[in-house]
Image (cartoon, rainbow, N blue to C red):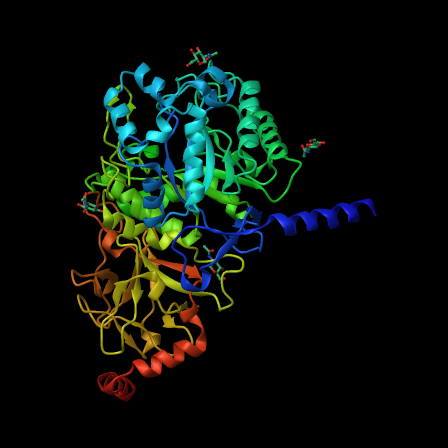
Length: 569
Ligand SMILES: *[C@@H]1O[C@H](CO)[C@@H](O)[C@H](O)[C@H]1NC(C)=O
Ligand SMILES: *[C@@H]1O[C@H](CO)[C@@H](O)[C@H](O)[C@H]1NC(C)=O
Ligand SMILES: *[C@@H]1O[C@H](CO)[C@@H](O)[C@H](O)[C@H]1NC(C)=O
Ligand SMILES: *[C@@H]1O[C@H](CO)[C@@H](O)[C@H](O)[C@H]1NC(C)=O
């Protein structure tokens, strides 16, 4: 009885407080609308108050370096930056903070101006004065709150990430911030700081999550202390602010949560626990450029799945809270890694936070105005550093799957990581092309390994080496198999018995070519041939009736002739 009453009253509160809010982001048309915050978890998915999936498509915004001020405020007004975040398709920011901001009252009370003066950053002060005058004489904590407020005003969700303790660049194994008991990492103080921040943002609905500690690492790291302190930190955050998602990171720079296979985390609350992992190219040194791209992708992706990805299979939400590349596109190690990453991210429809928003830092590792080549904004925080990169990740900015997404039948889309696009059918007589995944037809990948357009007898057919692939009806002879260690080459046997792989030509048409460097060769780049057949329930064009209508109306005489020819053969 007592239990029932509690349930009834908490339902009552839920109905009052799960107010729908607009959340930024590139949602497909049928999903536009309000998200009911706060968020919670449903199996491996993060969902809103209506049980509908919310995909975290975040960007990291650093606010943990020596100045303890969110980067970029000397370059652009905070509201302009928030709006740029939205216009680039992100719905969320992982905002980093140093523990001492929350635990050292005299640090929290230092003004922005004083902080910059103390570091000799006079040019930045002038920039702050010009772009963010109301912030210059706020305290550091006040400035942090002003940034959160600006993100909220722009419907951007915020995840507060305790990045380290002592303000500065992160992370090295020996910087004193790496693990509980290190010189700057007192566990009790950490609990105090987490509690303070959770309490401070309790009435900010857009603060949807807290990352408890970034990249645990170093000689002191051990599993026993992980359980002891992470569980304690999780309880502290949850009791201070039961609305937020509580996000736990792993060992070895947040690349390892494998110990949870044997012993799950034990917390008293449910529906709020999320794990996070990081995956960069340099996590594996130069392995990507020193090896064969297929073999390296296969082995490293397997390893990532074993160390962190398994949590999804165990029905835990997993947030890839840092990944990224040099956006100049000249780093082979980064480029190969990123094609592999995008394949995995699309296939698993991951929640993620890109490193980084930051175009340049006030001061990083002693360098004034350091350019950040991983940053989506340019040095001036003005324009996107690389717009083709943004196009490439745009497919991943909205959900492909998950609760409440769509009533339509599950299907596949064929994703091409190098472009971030999908294979689109145009019409019978025209070759397939790459285009926005939102315009993809529903594909089926049948047990016979044919790729057919759902609800029709039409399939993807190879015509010959270096020829465009076409829509056809002779499906039994067009089987597509995912081959190589990366499993990202879609190969088929041609009439003459040779093997060909799907590829893209310079006109963006889908063709079949000789399969490239499936193994061994370390110099050749196979990524134009990398595709991933991805589960989706996303789009309303998948509704059968509208699909059939458009198929019929889309046929012109040429199509019908081709169809007739196809049938006649
Ligand atoms: C607290 O912050 C002030 C101002 O930055 C600093 O001088 C002091 O050393 C800090 N105290 C501790 C215990 O870190
Ligand atoms: C989980 O923690 C509770 C106390 O919070 C304890 O009673 C229980 O035994 C723990 N369970 C496991 C499996 O460790
Ligand atoms: C953007 O990245 C692509 C590779 O993804 C590269 O070819 C291009 O040069 C980059 N553009 C700029 C402006 O850096
Ligand atoms: C895709 O969907 C199929 C069929 O429902 C399922 O067996 C498979 O595990 C899914 N793959 C992923 C990566 O979720």
